[in-house]
Image 1 (tube, rainbow, N blue to C red):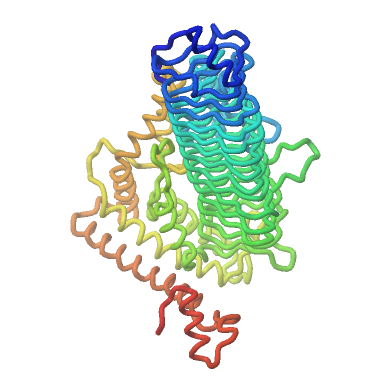
Image 2: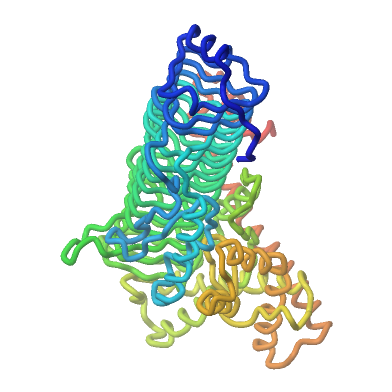
Length: 580
């Protein structure tokens, strides 16, 4: 908060304040702006040091050791107090992904998804983790104070207990039950009956309607609503969780769970959707709550899906049914994982033909509510990370088939793959690879300094090369990066040149497929082939959409229709398809 000039109260102002029903532990500890008027305070109690900026109104509230910014309203708050020296949630350890704390992330009020990803995932580099934690501890020390703050134009109304909470600008707290040891960044909304302890809520997030948080980080523009409960969890940009429960999860950008019966325990998610009655949990307690599951970007649980940790699915896998054999399908993205006859059966690449996949890819950038953009997020449909996975998937499926060319079914990492599904998967992956290479070759430049060769990762929403990630980690180790802000800047700089890195990767892959450096003509041919493959795949997904929009799906429409025409009109109008 910007420091303004404050002055002590005059004797006349003190008398006027007391006449308005106000009281103070010691009036001399109350400092006000030059234009202060006693009518700004009504039937309120002040304890410890309190600073009141211009335009502040405090009505029927108790305030202790707080600095109130310009235009703040505090009305009917049982207690707004800072009882002790506090870092306001900065430095709190959150046992994400692993309930026993093996991946604890120390949160802070400017934390990005990428910095948290390093702290959670790179535990095999203890020197890196220790260096990052020192950065967080230094930052937390800078944020520590004996006085709480409420930023300009914030409104605190009808809340009960707000203790050791730093509140940013334009924040609304309306009817919260208890907020303790945390930070509410600019533009946050906290609603009725919310309880939060040891927390940080990032810019423009909303936490409302009976939500309970314990040791949690809620990222930029997230929505927590309708009684959702979470402990030891991290939620990043645009995640939206209601009704259900989460414990020790790393919820990357766009993690969505809307249903009362959803339960997510000890896992990593990203661009994820949990269907009703879905359950990802850790039920193997022989050696404690030590297991975890990872659902790579774009995974989706159908209603009633269950996954027992440990487990791992490839990107954009649709999970249906009950799975307790600890599968690893990370090498086969865009698949269906279904339960049949008590077995986990995999359909490689099947999700590439689903219109739902296209809709997901298109809706995420359209639903980006962020104004600050602290997390780096790539929305590109065709990218090195997915394409690399599909290339490996082709190799994996070929290797399976070569083991027994005449087999009707193949066993793979605790799943079963039918021979017909394997063959279809190969065709789909190959077509998608052509589309992806063409798209990446058509973007970016051939500048040698942007070397995108080698492995790529999805670091909590950002596609990045292994080389750049390890360079960043090495620079943290040797002290070349000394603050979390400098670490974040590395990721942002890479993001600026993402197209060039992706182009470099695609060019090298294409050269390896050809066996020589491609000519300009060959590159143009690949770009054209990519467009054709993309259009062919869109025809498949459009056909899937048309099946979903067909009259076979009109069951239950036109309840009082006089004839078939009215029933069809009802169906098409309600579905937004227009009249034929």
